[in-house]
Length: 187
Image (tube, rainbow, N blue to C red; front, side, top):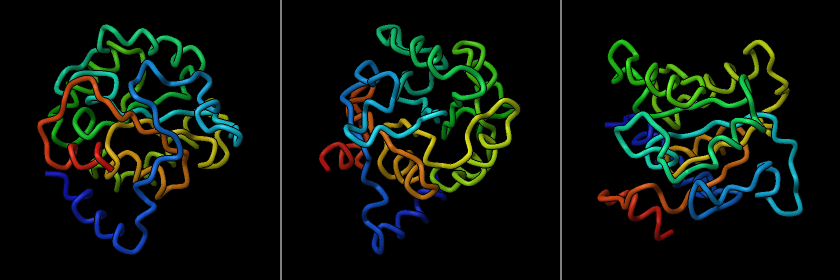
């Protein structure tokens, strides 16, 4: 269970816009690169990307890039280390014993996986601090970061809570069998 999401969902009663993305694409392969193109006329200076894993660019519970998503390589080329970071609510969390999933995912993708105890959306400030302070980072402020994810109540809410740009992947790798995910898709 994601206690962070359960508790943070109450913020939506007062601030419902926290789960509204700045841009929406159908699938991961539909992401415009560079990502600043996703936001229409705004064209923010996106210098770093926070990327969700499960059902975004990988099948849930798998630590490899979904084969049809050739777009991952382009994203990694435009946002090379240290400007691309995977933040998952599975790999890299306390549920990931000895961080074996995080290691396998990082090796398969060539992208570091953030290690965190609090799941999204509650880990946002820690992720932001990490990105700002990682050696070689060109990020000065949160509005230079795009968060890409398939969940409105975790990924998109985290982006909005910390002041990042949010891109929602509306159609994940697999069809969801989850009432919350189904509700998010129909929003």
